[in-house]
Amino acid sequence: MTPERNNRVLLLGATGYTGGLVLAALLRRGARPVLAGRNAAALAALAERHGGLDHVVVDAAQPASLQRHLRRGDVLVTTVGPFERLGYPVAEAAAEAGAHYVDSTGEVGFVRTLRDRYDERARETGAVMLPAFGYDYVPGILAGTLAARRAGDAVSALDIGYFATGPLWRGISHGTRTTMRDGLTLSSPTWRGHRLVDERTASRVRGFDLRGHRKSAFLVSGTEVLFLPSDFPSLTELSVYNGWFPTLSRPLSLISAAANTLVRVPGGRPLTDALTLPLTWGPPGDPDTTERARTRSYVVAVASADTPGQPPLAEVHLEGPSAYTLTGELMAWAAESLVGRSGGAAGVVGPVETFGLEALEVACAGMGLAAV
Image (cartoon, rainbow, N blue to C red):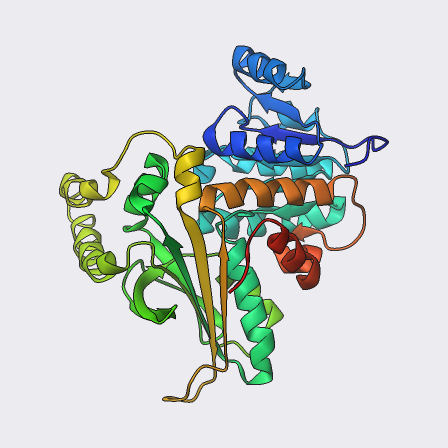
């Protein structure tokens, strides 16, 4: 950002793990964000450690508390979740103020509701609202867009798989493991027959070719199904898969089936929790710089035609930094790009509609996420 701009980046959640990564990325870019949160002492200490950043105490549960600190053209960046429980007042404040909005959610249900509630108002006020602008799910949207464009008008199906390299079990946070566990009993939206269809998470397992090896991945939710079909009207099917632990994909499919049965039985919740508890096992805390450097993200998009037995029309592979590092960099770049912006796309929109494919691809390459 240039010093003469009057608009600001307001960072909500900077004292947390993901917020700290976003803050570090913003500072590396020369930005001086305003820190926001409810813990005055923690905010003041963090602001002081970074050269006396401005900070404000706000109640994220009260839109008016945030809104009085926002102006049209500001950017509100939030990493405060779970978003289904804590995110709506924050998004409302941005939409009402005409401030741009970037969040780190991986909760697709939250994004669907965000679009239903605030898209129209954000368009009226000129606010660009970018939910899930991190590892969840910018790499998949980028890879899917590239694959579909290369496939051309014949494309009717997209399958997107998220993978990782390195010792991943130590490279993911306890919070991520808990989210994966909870997600097994939530539905995953897919795009089928030109409409959104909710399916059981892990109800399907698909293989992807990675560097000469076949890796399995299980069905999960992803905002790709919300944003890509409008860009590619010929798409009749679009699904997202997680292949972080390929050898566990089929066992997880069975666990998901059992968990979804138990959770609907009276008194079945404790049994469901016991069944899925092993998924949260792992080292405590969040991956530090060393652990993040040992793991890398890998995303595959396969574009196909509606012709059984035919090879894919196009396939795109992207590799980049760890999910957490990439999330921090993506959110910082989006905030820097949006601050002071007027005109162009507004409302609850996706990365490509907001920035254009070429700009997004170039920016991601600069962060280390590029085709392989």
